[in-house]
Image: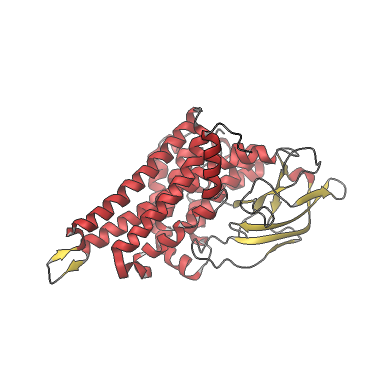
Length: 385
């Protein structure tokens, strides 16, 4: 997969400074309420759009930033340090936008780059669960130049907030391939968001089941050709999704390390006139957190380098980075909870939020267990599918 690599205003520090302003000025102040009330991070997404950051993977010629894997990962990772829900909404927007960039109409591409079109993926289904590449939902011919979609999508991030879904179905022609993708307006008649999301972590990402009951869309909404969905999923979506999901995990780890170190350095045993950080055991725990975070970040950065240079091990790196970062993040946040003790159970420290958010990566398709199966096949020289 190739993403545009032109830098923001010819200088990466331009978008970095803008990102920092949005994170500290809007995302961080909103994060507690987003999690506590399980509400969509509306203000944060609007601020990112107004700053041009929702166009990170969009081409410069249509108003995007053209930052590629590396820039998109930096944005998602930084957002995750403040708010995992916001990071995941942006992750899914970038993934949907990448498909639209390659196969969608120019007006939608421009809107996605501008941040006025919020994109997301509608792949996972009740019937095939985390095997997102194998849709059960159907597409059939309706009236003139019209297609009828029926499906039970198990989870769609930004389900009630997205402008449109990059939607998967079985092909129109059974022998055309495994799946076909469509650009489906979220307000299409026959679509129904089942219920508001009220989960353990990523509580503001509006991830809900959606059913399609005889949803009619123009056949011009097809993305990439009948039966080409699987190729697009594997070649366009999977590399970007795994990289950005890993970036989200690394961001959560980084936040946990920083918050734990600050807590340990500032919390005192008055009767001993010492801080928690004065204890070698505590420093040992924090050191392990730091090392695991840096290891996951290094693998992520090497994955991006492999994709950018077309290295032969790029596929293996793509599979590995999400699994490794997801598992490392759980280890790191569990250690943070242990080091911070009772204070970690308070919401104001935000460590417990990192703990809950970090557990989502392992169950997002492809799940960690599925990835390990793929990695094992790749190492043994076996076909993945």
